[in-house]
Length: 122
Image (tube, rainbow, N blue to C red; front, side, top):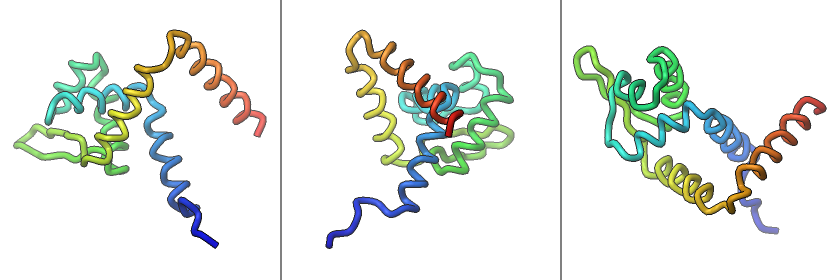
């Protein structure tokens, strides 16, 4: 008998990663970091139009999940995408969304609403 494609622990961890990516603020920060090698917290806040405290909280979660890494430079903290795997997940996710048909927004909203209803019922 062959091994399953993923262990239960791997599946749980992947689900947690995607849960983290379910937040538009965190995705916006990561998307900005895709195009900029490294950014300080205040630069990310300005670029995304997000309050600095919200950016810091989001980056803390992303760092705990090893999706971003940081470098301290005096009082400034600079963040970057942690590694090529994270970069690839983000790039492929964005590519997938960009190739959805025009009705894709309705499809995603519909699926999201169904998931929310199912989670409440579950």
